[in-house]
Image (tube, rainbow, N blue to C red):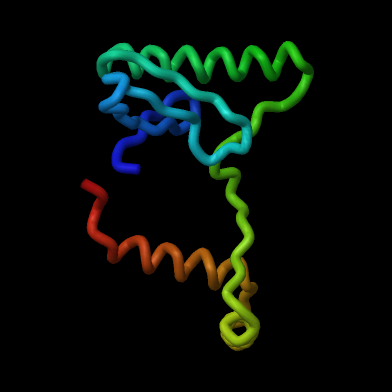
Length: 116
């Protein structure tokens, strides 16, 4: 995925179908399937905004909370040995595993080249 649209806290993909000659995408990082399409970039952005607005309205009408992408928690399965090492490191540092993982992600992502 190379490009993402953002609106009201939601992220949407941008894809091109050469067979149909249309742009299309879907809301990313949620389980609900919400898609949109258009023939040009401005139309796709408009369709993305409409899809987000429609999704939120549909959830409200159904009386359920809409899913939110990147809520701030996720499961990590590093394997028993790496898990053990991280727990021991956290104990030695007087902190917890969440802090160790968050610090490690910040350090890793901070040294990565920005996405083009």
